[in-house]
Length: 307
Length: 307
Image 1 (cartoon, rainbow over the protein chains, first blue to last red):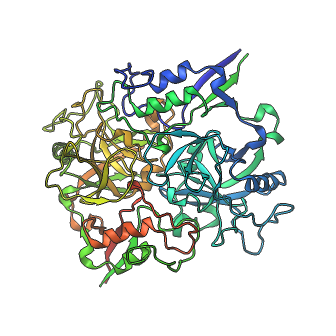
Image 2: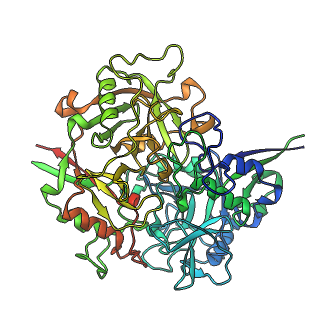
Image 3: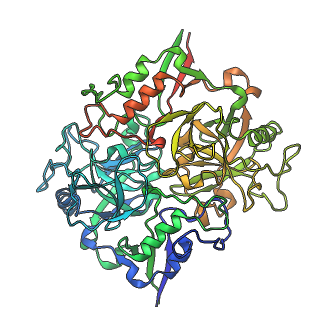
């Protein structure tokens, strides 16, 4: 028998623990987000592709990352090559900067004793935007400080520039990127970071985003902040260990996350965005009537086999 | 002799530890934020008003909160009354919800054994917006998902609604609000929360904001997340203790934070916003050219007396 439970990367309610009843509907079907999810059918959800899913094991728990090969094919291929040869195993979290990012990789990168890249590339050309032509893009009606058009592509927050025909992933909370040095093509995927604060959207098109955390964000966001410049840890013993990173496809199915992700190219997702725009939960005094790109939750539900 | 050092609630640089040189200037004076702050004069900074500053002592450190009586005079007065009688001393952090809020107050609120309010009010009418007439408002040129106009008032992020002549504080990272139940007038200031994730701007005008954390955010943002619904802690022993909250005016000067805050009603602040809009640090490939309200840092510097 399959039992389902839904949990959120973003919260459903504000401060009240009560289960609210719907207020009059300003638009759409007049549903709350909880109701939209209750009404969602099996085809509204999708499984994670094991070939696009990383499992990062920390002492505190496992972080599950969905990769975005549609936007960063070269970085994703290089990350897969690094992971397959165990590059990350035994490395560390090197940085935790308040209201910004947590970053992991080789503490000796660029120094003597740095880990070998094996058959992975040392540098990958930057993948800052892509051609938007023929790219399925679920646009949402939202003003945005950093882009003309915003929406979702394959479950990832994204933006589009109509004039130049480009699309790119956006630095919302939980998005994962590939750190780089000064050069535009100096990243490789060997040093990765995740957004843990207010979305630093000025990084859009300046760093290659490679995916997002779909489970286990709390193991990263609560790490003690580094006391060095930019939140780097100063002492080796402060750096939390990255026990290993594995690709889902290289793990037995029983060890992969039993989760499904809400699709973003469906009517149900449009209703979810509407439910976030018009807050119908009883607790709200002002129904808002607006929504921001990085305020739209991307629901994940657990799908557990229980006999 | 006074020695000065500047630190930020928001990060200055992205991923590179190098101290960048300025790139060609698309506008303004062509300065980076670091240069704007280097050039700032004494009158660009202001002290904290001890009568509007709370010091919350946790086991891990002290959190400094600047209150906003211009927007929430009744709540601020009630918080002062609660603090003066030691209401918060020995209470606890009751909630830590991933990418949302950390909240503190009386774990027994509303139950038997709840702490007495003394001469403070049990309920304060909601202060969700105020008259914008004659309110000094430093508008910034930014698209915003949730408001027609955004900017800063007395060092706090705010929004304005031209048509209705209202202004309100906005739920940016580190802003502090007064939790409430279902009723619009059910808050009191006895239960406070702080934003620890992507700014939940849908709460604007739905909860009374009372101020913001200016120092010590890391003691709140890194707290283990609660495992109950909405991130509430489930067991009493999980709840981090609030040792005490004091008003600066009731503390010896030597125990108050030796910090100054960058004023937001100055030319220097306009240059800072410009420096965040056009990223002139060498690391940036795309100078951005845009800025979001909650992405503007509100610099705090330490001012230490050293003999």
